[in-house]
Each structure stands twice: as C-alpha cells, then as structure tokens.
Length: 225
Image (cartoon, rainbow, N blue to C red):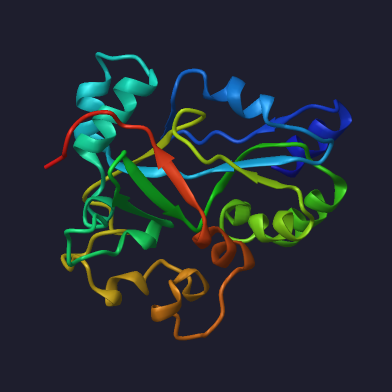
C-alpha cells in the first residue's frame, strides 16, 4: 500500500481506494474526482452494508446505476442498518458507522466513520501508514485529515453511493446473538462506540464531528418494509 501511495505522489496523481467487496454507483468516480479542490484534498463517503448473497443474486442481471444499487440496497440492507430506522427498538447500525432515519423527503444517514475513497497523498500520509496498518483508512486516518483541514465528506447519494457486500453468516458480525453489546466486543474498537456505549470515554475526533452531520439518501420510492 505504501508503494502505491508513494507512486501517487511521484505521478502527482489522485489515489483512489477500491475494495474487492464493494460496489460503487455509476458516475461516482467522476463526481468524487471533481470534488478535489487542492493538492492535499481527500474525499470521504459513507459505506452501506448489504447482505452479499441476496444482493448479488439480483445485481448480477443489473447495472451499477444509482437507481438499481439504491433499490437493491434498501431491499437487502444488512440487519444492523435495517434496525436503525426510527420505528425499531434495536438500533445498533452504528457498529458500521451509519444510522439511518426516515424524513418527510427521504432518509438521513448519520455517518461517523466515513471511508476515504479519493485522495491527494502527501508525505505525512505515507509516514502515518508506515506506523499503522492499512485498515486505519476509516478508523484513524480521517481524524488526521480533519485536523489538517484536508477532509471533504460527500453529503448526498446523488454524488456517490457505496455498498459493502457482507456475508450474513460472517463470524465478524454474527455469532447467534443479534443486537447485543457482547457481540461487538469481538471486533469493534471501543473508541468508535457512540458516547452512550463508550466505556473508555474517548472517541476519534472525526467520529465525534461527523456524527453532527447527515448524509441525504435521495430515494424516491415509498415506504420500505
């Protein structure tokens, strides 16, 4: 990873992060690149979990337009996201950094762990990653970018919508006990818990700040079941 970051500096190129288990809506790459407004700007956006098998079973016959991905996402959102709607008593969607609420015009997603997808890398980023593992890109790196005033966060699904394919049977998220704090301790860092569940009484800077802002999902269908 460091080699790729070094190459982006060498070529004065925009570095784009894409994981093999994620789907990005058509046109999103162009939109994100157009938001880069300085030589050190980094663009982040929420990532929504969907149930992998069910989602792919329908998606394989469709394209990655915003309409198709949004409709399939709402149909096959991972259980933690489904349970985050206002009328649910089991809201633990914050385990993935996103909590969704219905509004009169659509849906708002509170996003505390934005993932950086489009970035202009500087040497301090490389030094940072040399000291840490690659998976800090959404748990720690955004705090550094926020302090440096380099972080821009996408606010609407019209600009970009990303889904992460998640196995329903994955031990990382499921051990026979849904919606309990006990299961979270197996994989989730206490620093990323919402304040009411944070027993260490500390959080990342960006997870606190981003929790004050909403991401608007432009979804023009009626109610979802």
